[in-house]
Length: 344
Image (cartoon, rainbow, N blue to C red; front, side, top):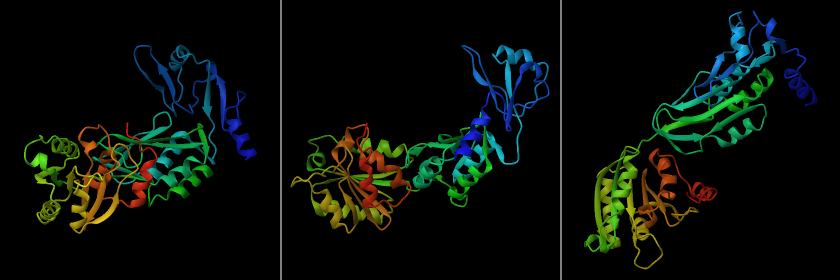
């Protein structure tokens, strides 16, 4: 470990090192830059003016001086070292799974972007193991978040300008390129039936404002609402409509309202009576603690609490991407939602 620190210290020694050396600008012509040099134009732009690998010319000297450079670090690469761009390529190869593409290295950083609309899935244990190594980093969006095509899923880089091949071999060993750290899973559920419970809605005493909210959320993911059915409160009716929707080919069934423990709230009992397998009735998320999730075969059935109708973000928003990708959701997965379970 002490030897590693010594090598890292050597890399940035003001007196030069065996990996790179600092030279006066007056002696820079003909030398190869070991890292990008960024030029900031106030009110204009910030970008690399000279890229790694650039051979300094006489014409470059006035420009470099205008950027405040009086000395340059030039690269004396040895066989056991990788440049930051090469290290970033190793990280990208470790991380990039299905439906992701990488950007070209820029100032030592590579980003991964989604190539389809879908949900980001990350092996968080191995991501932690890589970030724990030191000298390398991968920053991602949160696990299970929805991504649009072209949206950035992750960014990565090595911390020093030069990094030992041995360190990047550790990254590769953890990552296993045959099983990348992350991928984007496209949405496979495309149709839904919405069952609006409540006698007061069925009879027109109260206008339905629940179904339009749910339809709008589904439409953001490209899901078509095949049918909206007003069921009233009878358990038998709700159960029959669930079974009818599945027979008709609906890939998802959502029941709105009637999810509390009050005697006149019948939705949970109706879902149970349909023969569906209950995963969880209740979730450590606010708002949305009374949500129910079940499966009839591979068809998800959810009982949505009333908060979905008026709250901007609820448990439904947290689980919907996973539901629509047909990612298996267990009771343990629901329990894990408690960390960060207060929706903004």
